[in-house]
Length: 331
Ligand SMILES: Nc1ncnc2c1ncn2[C@@H]1O[C@H](COP(=O)(O)OP(=O)(O)O)[C@@H](O)[C@H]1O
Ligand SMILES: CC(C)(COP(=O)(O)O)[C@@H](O)C(=O)NCCC(=O)O
Image (cartoon, rainbow, N blue to C red):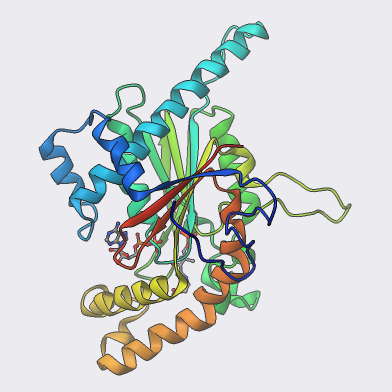
């Protein structure tokens, strides 16, 4: 078994358990997990796998086969079991027209850890398992307050912190999905203009599975003024994945992505960051590090990392994005 380094604010096991307590997780080394891949028949042809890589230019095909294929199979088992349980419960309750309840998967983790990449690969892979072809993907950034509102609340330097989201709207969105509403719409966010896009929605119809990806999807429910805890988003998740890595690696991935965007997206005249396209290399690195050290790094430590032990499964990556071990909840 791989040893784990403790992170600030976490238990010595790094999984929420404390000395002398049984860990609620089963930990599988990279080798043990990859072994499962050899026992899993891929629902994707070689060409489909190759096409999948196009989704995430950087992702290694071996990684897709050894890590994400068994993960999609495991998820597929959970989806089937949840569907069966739901149907049997509805029959037991004599409900004749049971509503469709999509299987909801949360994908959490830091900015730049690889949540979007993981979520997109899982979306494609899950859609190839015959039982559930309609897999929708929603990112929580559409539920950020628009920049005007963030400015009004003094939160422009806190984008991504829990209070920068319209949490009530986000919760309603997931409740609507889980209660089997036929059509559900979510607002969208543009990384180019760095703001919510007015009047643009992503509409989800009849999904079998919905993946909800975002920094704070595992945040526990807030305690209300009357002292009672409400419901949190994760109360409506059937499964959750926390994408994890050492903070120093994530900080480097953030800076590298920033430098790549400086060569591409930041040059777009509509880009909020077009001023960064003019920076020389050292200035650009300093600016990316400043944003990390003042916004995304503190958010990771204060809000995101403390939710890791709430996940059903943790994917722990190494410095090159390869998954080093997988932790799965067994209790
Ligand atoms: N599995 C992977 N292999 C290689 N590079 C990856 C992988 N996952 C993410 N990356 C790279 O890491 C950076 C952050 O990934 P991204 O999915 O955009 O993160 P997030 O959605 O968490 O902000 C991107 O530059 C992306 O290309
Ligand atoms: C938009 C984000 C808050 C991520 O939102 P998410 O989809 O995880 O809800 C983040 O990518 C972001 O822009 N953070 C602000 C600091 C920065 O510019 O990196």
